[in-house]
Length: 91
Image (tube, rainbow, N blue to C red; front, side, top):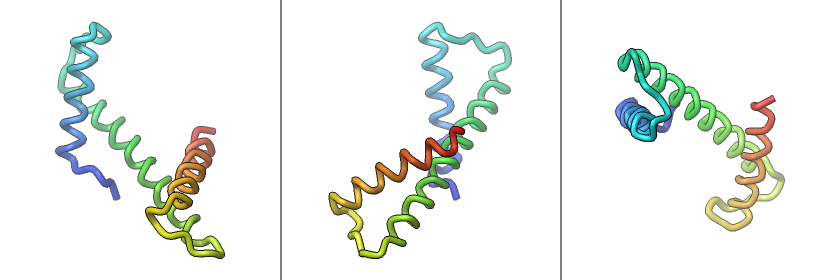
């Protein structure tokens, strides 16, 4: 499940394209195709982030001791496990 709505992803895609255009980094010959591709890339990125988030939360919940969500320890473990999972997926 993607935590961002399609309209939010669309908004972000427009912002990315506007930034690239204004920064002189890209010139889009086919604006519609570029927008569609940008949305697909963002959707894939956020989908992977959501998958990693799910794995990390499961890891923390499966620890032998209970770590309360929102605690400093939970935050530290979350960041550590998130980085580990992200590195695994980049390989």
